[in-house]
Image (cartoon, rainbow, N blue to C red; front, side):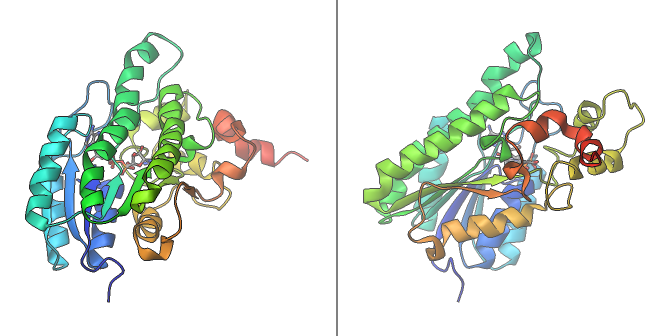
Length: 294
Ligand SMILES: NC(=O)c1ccc[n+]([C@@H]2O[C@H](COP(=O)([O-])OP(=O)(O)OC[C@H]3O[C@@H](n4cnc5c(N)ncnc54)[C@H](O)[C@@H]3O)[C@@H](O)[C@H]2O)c1
């Protein structure tokens, strides 16, 4: 018997990365899946976002597990499109129990002209679209007699991240939103929580732009160099975690194991955020050097 038998879960940003891992984990536990992704570039984002082919692959992988899966190209910022998708998919699959609001972009910037430009894009995508997805799916959760919303925060929900004001504000705001929704929806037996991962092995973090950003002045730096730097950010000796590690937390929060858990921001962060707030991300690659001091 699976922990999600008879349930239906909707996951945003599921073409690949953590969203795909969550889809497969929840499906392996018996859930039918609705998966959405923007499947096109957002202006200013310096790495490739998910594609239609990747979305189709997520659907195929879920179906291989013997579960039903419906995939939709949908920008989570667009409430009308998200409402249309939810209504159509839930019409077909019959109910909705879990909403994993996972989509997001990493768009670092400085305190500069570029920062002025990208601020709205990051806040719209990583915060406002979380609100909109929740608003259009809550009526379906109510119809099912309750459910679970899980929003993907970040270590940046809990500590500030250097060169990432917009991302930090969006992810901090997401926790405020989760707590308000948890309070407002508790009477409907809708639980609302967040997972807060450290860096994860997906294109959002492991990309050429971040190699340059974290290793300035090293034009020949490679992913291996990024790996070594990233390991200094976590307490546990890992540079980043695998998407499936976050899926365990998502499954817990989605299932009855977390029946009385609501309003929490659950770190899956290899200890990153219990280091002095703000210090680790600020000093970044200098952590290893500082640790060697008496
Ligand atoms: N990778 C990391 O280091 C890391 C760390 C902490 C938190 N996160 C968060 O985890 C979540 C998942 O990211 P990931 O690591 O799997 O990265 P990813 O880039 O592999 O996956 C994110 C997916 O979201 C989709 N997406 C982006 N904007 C969208 C929109 N407006 N509507 C619909 N889909 C959209 C992308 O196309 C992509 O397929 C994000 O919220 C991210 O902020 C990532």
